[in-house]
Image 1 (cartoon, rainbow, N blue to C red):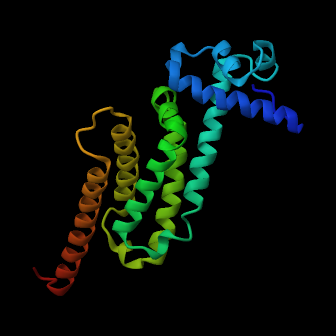
Image 2 (cartoon, one colour; image 1 turned 60 degrees about the horizontal axis):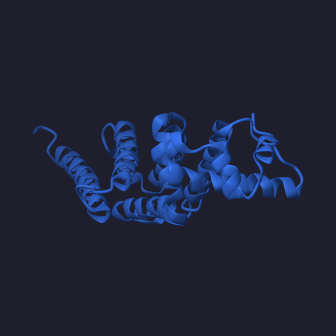
Amino acid sequence: MPRKPKQSRSIATVDAIVEAGFICLSRHGLAGTTTNHIAAVAGLSSGSVYEYFSNKEEIFEQMGERFLQDVTQFVSTLKVQLPEMEIPDVIRVLSNGFCTLLMNNDRRYLYFVQYVLLADSREFTELLSRALNDLAVQYLMNHPRYMRIRNLNTMVYIVINAGIYNTLLNLSSDSPPVKFDALVDGFVNIVTYYVDHDLMLQDKNQSNPAA
């Protein structure tokens, strides 16, 4: 287990190691990154790194915690904003915000997702799915008309997980088949069509119960 720093100097040292870990991962990939690489970029001796981390895997673990904290914070900042929006705007704000998070700081989080999380992404996807599901529940409480959608829980699950997967797949590709904006527009069209069509059929059936 990584040593938890308490003093400000130790915290700064761990931050430098984690920062160097992101840089080295983008340069050398998962297999190519070594503790010596990380120590050199952090401006530390290998021995100093080993005071806090037993190996590079523990550094990657700390990097993962940093990433998940930022993802959770990003989702939390939207809890007030999103319930007032219509579905297309919700999808665009979430997609573009997540894209920005991944691409900031020389794409450090995107490289991390590519090299580390996609190798064992269960923890990440489950945490993000839970956070987005909480947002969905809050949104539905503010838009009760959507509570009528058939198989609502299933559709929310599909929309959230398909959105996560396709966003990561698109941004991770050097030559994606469609641009990211086009991907988001297509996702908006699919979701809004399903919602509008489902509610329209229900209204029609209620107006013509014998049909």
